[in-house]
Image (cartoon, rainbow, N blue to C red; front, side, top):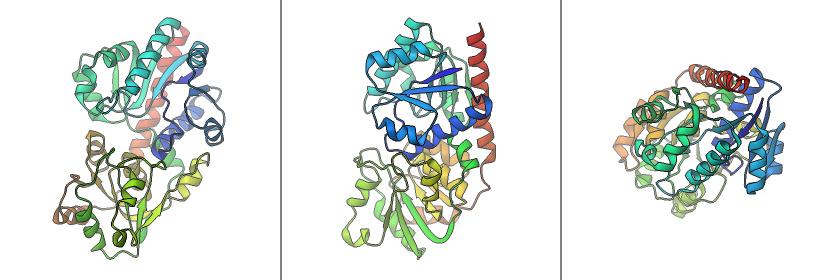
Length: 349
């Protein structure tokens, strides 16, 4: 089977996206060792090739993208929140172009491991057109599947789990270390209104090590590095900035650098997932439905972005170590198998 990945955010600098892709590729190799996978991205393709050997990466030139789709058996929209357009329509516009090419070239489209942030995303005409071309959709959580089912999308929909679980079950991060607390703070181009209260609550634990963990390696407004730089100097000096990812490094190497905090406070989806495999006590900051769904799925306390110190302290006390979420890894692996079987059946027709 020749699979073309139609999403193009891999290798952009967000470790979570690459963990998800790594989980998919691991499951696919188990199911179909001979499968050929291509992708088109605007980022460092040489680094992606080092990280994901065996996957062929191409550029975003329209002719090159067309050739990739023409050569594939199945187009796959893999991971992320592809229908989100509250801040920008760039990804929805990309998907509309891809859907048009798939229609012209007679290639089946599928979505696997995706999320839907808000039901309103599905009312957009372009999104409806893309969903209308999809032969099937497997979501990364139950809430996303429910939102699609409650819309009038015609594609078959099934709820599953994030594909990063497949990788993390096989290559878990280091176990939680007593005395270490970590923050993974991202507010999507905005500020963190409850920052000072949350940091004071964490400081009251009297940790031996305080880690400001950057899942995103780029300098983006409202992301980890920018928020770290915006801390008052006297506050910043007490925190250690840790960025475990390095372009092109194997994902196992990046996970080895994960600090394994005893307590982790996060507004990053994949940080919550990774910390659950490390055995951390996790508190999720619910800045969107994706994070709120993760808190429910993982059984962690949930706070709002403007939570006061007392609320944060209550959440920290309520956070407990959970068993590794093997059920989610099994659900994600089953979703890959379900998609693969459906795609093989479509190819055989």
